[in-house]
Length: 364
Image 1 (cartoon, rainbow, N blue to C red):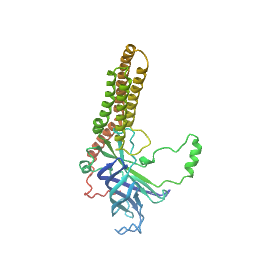
Image 2 (cartoon, rainbow, N blue to C red):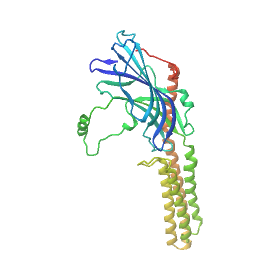
Image 3 (cartoon, rainbow, N blue to C red):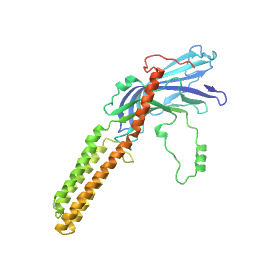
Image 4 (cartoon, helix red, strand yellow):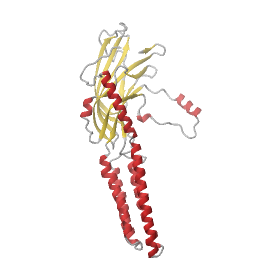
């Protein structure tokens, strides 16, 4: 595990999500209980005892923990059977707390969120490298799936992915005026980032509530605006009054929906749908003003009928496009389901121990 060329000590990390609590969309955080096991080889004389204050320690901490989580840390020392001069030190942490996570809400409410634990070392990156434990597959405890508090709102997938990059680390800092060579100089001038490893589980929002209480109500409000064409086109005062009532209702309803979301700088899919429907009502309002000001009564009725057909066709096309988007937006959910099936198959083939109360030690 230790590279003699660059003196980097490799620390293998295994993560198990024991419990996942409430997912707070408004404040972009979630509650969880996690077991983290880190192990490394040392040639120090331990004599069966290990003191993190005296002996080498990776100095791990959770980067995205909110405030100070509750931690219980235990150590185990085992002799390396491949080299009797070395010892295997196993650090076991049980962490309970609240963790911050940047939620991606572009596809809300058909969104998939990453719930991650970012384990990072305080040591110089030239001294340590955190890697995923090849002998144990990080996972969610089966009990955690059954006791998931928000299972009425979220679908929790059972597999865990390990990486070196957190969701909030993504994104390029290259601007339109910077050349690749300038960007290379900037990267060289930046200090090395500390070694980290990220364990990520996934959950998909159950959108049924929003389908009936948001999308369907917006659909009904917008569709009802088409009934105004039954009023005489030469009575614009009646048409405009009713249309503006529908318009104000749509705007007010959108503000009510936004109360369940954090303040973000981009539009969610629900925002886009609501704004498109508001714009559709505005088109109706503009037409009612135009038809009342021009043409004779007989001509206005004929033209109004054709506009009604055009508006109805546009309304159908908008929702046809929305149904296509809805199918495409669920592609990530279908991918995660396939990954979950592969993980469960691998889990059964390798007979992985998924219960944290059982002791396990892997000798390297």
